Image (cartoon, rainbow, N blue to C red; front, top):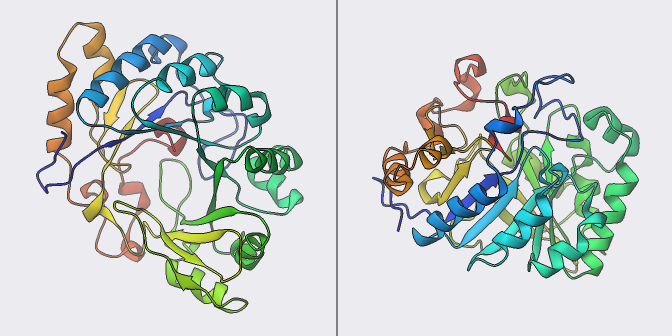
Length: 326
């Protein structure tokens, strides 16, 4: 079991398969012509499986595959199939554009839940945000996953002045579609030009939602990052991930393994542990993992002030979001 100095048990591992992506969302990728990691520095399929097994032996029972976009990796089917054989709940975070190509792989690997990133329900704004013309493909693939019985969570990064006016539209979408929309507060990463006035907070989201709907709070699962709500009579739900205005670090059970094999004990941790190089050198990575988790800060990587309004994002030492893994 992996327990930090604040007695938080860590049983959830997010594995980034690549820092590459077929979208170019500005809040994730610093610029269009981004320099991706060289292939030799990435974890290979067998290495991902080997490291995953170590984490499973240490108590991990949930694994999420992320990127970049995990499904752009050529050996993604092989990796998904291999991890699907482990005694874990396996899921993915994806932009959804290639899901139709992977439907059989996901089914055979037992993937029952997906997070699909979608920041707008407007095709023109989608192209503005992603710099790609794939809106209808993503919407079709959401419908495909729902038809397959997959539990679909839709991740919406809400930014003041960009898509905050669509909150009501997203909640209305849940009336007849069993989608589970999760509004995410805008977070600072290297190169994403974060400023506090772009953050649309949990309370602001609920205030906007209340203009059109009456809703009830849901009972959240243990270690949940999202505060859930339902509009009575709706097929789906909505939730808010309030990282900036109301962090949930006291129940954190998550770890992140970057595509180049570095372990981060927090999304905002500045320190990383190089498990891949150690494993390739024959070192005992289990000891390194335990040491990394023991060093975890109480909250937000130990880098944030008490209120996000006073945060200077240029002082936060971290990678870009695409280099960490969603």
